[in-house]
Amino acid sequence: MARIAVFGLGYVGCTTSIGFAELGHSVIGCDISDLKIQSLSRGIVPIFEHGLEDSLQKSLVSKGIEFTLESGKALKNADFVFLCVPTPMNPDGSADLHYLESALDEIQSDLEPETIIVLKSTLPLGTGENIRKRFQEFENSIVYNPEFLREGTALSDFRNPDRIILGSDSDNAARQTSNLYKGIDAPVLITGFGEAELIKYASNAFLAVKISFINEISHLALNTGINIVEVASGMGMDKRIGEKFLSPGPGWGGSCFPKDSRELVTTASKNNVELRVLEAAITANEDAKNRVVEFATQVLGGDLSNKKITILGLAFKANTDDVRDSPAMAVASKLIAEGAHLKAFDPAVKRLDSQDLELAHSVKEACKGAELLIIMTEWLEFAELEPKEIFLEMASPNVIDTRNILKNRDWENLSSQFLSLGGRS
Ligand code: UGA
Image (cartoon, rainbow, N blue to C red; front, top):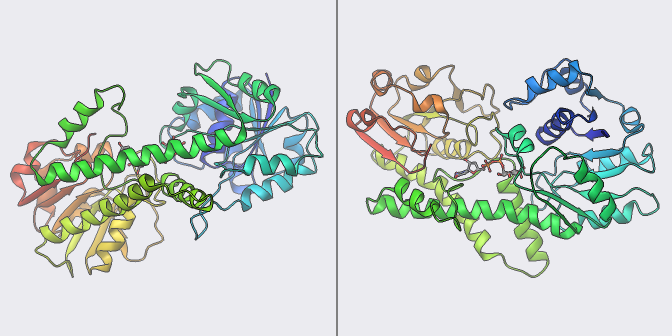
């Protein structure tokens, strides 16, 4: 079993440390936030992610995991150091590598010669090679091991990945890294740095394109009275297409697809390549969000000023409290800009920066006096709502379900206007 240091304890870092501890490795997590270290050391995971806390507490009891603020302590006798710091987006669409640079600066002085550096952060093309050059006078091998974890199912994705990608110029280091995943049943692909970097970006981009495609088909289906759920289901039966990521909705969001798709377009353009399909998918994604506002305007008689609207769901998808680049937040801002008064409820989002968006404590409180209810996130508890009870709270029973989770026929039967934009629960 190996000794693994993990730097950066956000979504990826927490899941990676807890996942490796579960596999029996001895893990030490390191972060610059004292609060995070204290919380994790007490068995509390500072992010909203199913299953992590249980697993962390088991590993704390068995002493398979510990946390520290001190990079020197984390790196002592480490066989591997995993860098899991964020690579957010610069205003020009490119990736901001300053967290990664600081993490590399931090490990440089205490790094032991045999420690293998494993990069988990999403790396723009050429970064692995640049880091290799930066560490050329060191003996350390470098491996890029991109993550394919989804928020909300991150631990289960760690345990059951579709594949493990290892990009390196050292076959030996890549193989040693692959041994860390012993016990996990997944194919391992060893490549160069560039290939691994592009696999990560192209995979996210491909999924974003797939969703934008089904969202446009969904628009066509809506305008022609065709049931998109049946269409998506029939398409998904073709193994070459696959049923996953064919749920239409209000557009893709989150901390990855929007940032990674723009970074890929930017990098391609720097290399004189136009990624037209991906660019169109990005535009189609804006259209998907705008369509929700257009439908709201139609339902409310052509003018949104002073209209009372309820938004159910603010997270970019269910089972997370993450509102980064959330379609719900974008739609809310647009509705507010048109003069509407908004109240929102999300089971996981308890705090917002926006002053204009009133956050309610319950669905019913959010719906009081509303002239329109818009479902933006596919939380299971919204699917179970009783239309009669909700309509009692509202001023007018109008509903737009952007995720098609309201299956109860009464929604349609009892509302004045009911619009389902497509999607499957
Ligand atoms: C995504 C990828 O799925 C992960 O493999 C990857 O590791 C991660 O980005 C990353 O790069 O870190 P995540 O951002 O957690 O994961 O979210 P997804 O589950 O992929 O959903 C992204 C967006 O697409 C959400 O807004 C979701 O509602 C939307 N979506 C997804 C649809 O509208 N329809 C679908 O059928 C699927």
